[in-house]
Length: 517
Ligand code: FRU
Image (tube, rainbow, N blue to C red; front, side, top):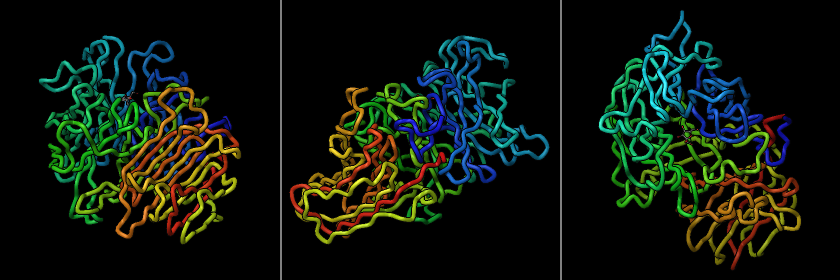
């Protein structure tokens, strides 16, 4: 494995080989960022679900580590798989897992049992049951011991939802300082409900409340996350964000999975969404990302509220298996910093590229500006395939302004990213982006609403890697992530202004170096 295979992400995490999906157990501990993830040790398709592991000092360079939790029974047929979950540093040793002074890391994950069995704890589980279990690490997250004496620690969904035991998953845990308790959110996937639990010791859990269904309920609800964010940088004004994955039923114009969120309040037991965060009729939603390829977003434990950071999986269950990626299969999105900002009187989720990405950007960048961009097209030449682009402009009489990226020199292959001044939307057009044949829904155009700022300026920041584009619009109030699979020589770029001119164009293209050298 040399990390130079066709389409291999150069500055996004992907495993050396094999399938990955959801990030899990994101925890910052002793100066290290840990990322665990759904991993199949045996192939490039979903199966044998285990927790893979990678670590980073800066959220930019990743080092893949040995498997943290290996599917029980692997390589024969698994009797327990380790589905998505979360992790915390139990600094006060509430769990009692500490030995001497060593702080235990505790992970809580979904045990997925393909077969009915009696577990070492004496508990009995049914065929296809999903329950919540814990494991701990006394060597800072490198090796893990499952709590066999007690697992699963949450055996069944609470009354009256016991019949949902096959779709009960994805525990997200965090320490709630105000109530001095651990709080956990789990999904009852089929009925679009989340259950909130509390605990003193990470072992005994009490069901406290439910949330949902609200907004988008097109498919199952999975991978919940709950965390606080200060509003307008004011630590005395905190709101809470509930993130929920949906599969299928993602944003308008996409097929397959997507990620929504709610803004609200949380008192230690119950999450209440703000009135302007829920819409009647379960039709619309707050989309965390308007593209087809941002799923199972999970946030870090162990950072300050002002440093809230999330990582999503750049894929879509619609075609996750079919993407032309081998010997690895799946990648993570660039880490995003989250905040809340009041824009037009509305509390708005702001997502920005984590500042550490700058660490791997070259100093020599291409910059250009045009008071009036009157040309229909302006070739930028061969700019490369790993880029961080900043583009801003304001409306004149064009309908569309934007940039063509990852184009071949004959422009037959290209990805168009831009802004439609009429519909006030960012768009990513991957209909001619390269290999589009592996799924019939893949060749599409995606849209995200974005209002120009109070000075009439539209700002786009675009991360481009060998198989993805991530667009951050405005201050980060709209994002759009899409996979693309262009040829190795698709390095050309071009600006376009369609139907007229565009004003005050400022372009900066920074080259991003590979993290695998
Ligand atoms: C979401 C998901 C989770 C589950 C995991 C299994 O992508 O379906 O709900 O825990 O993947 O790999």
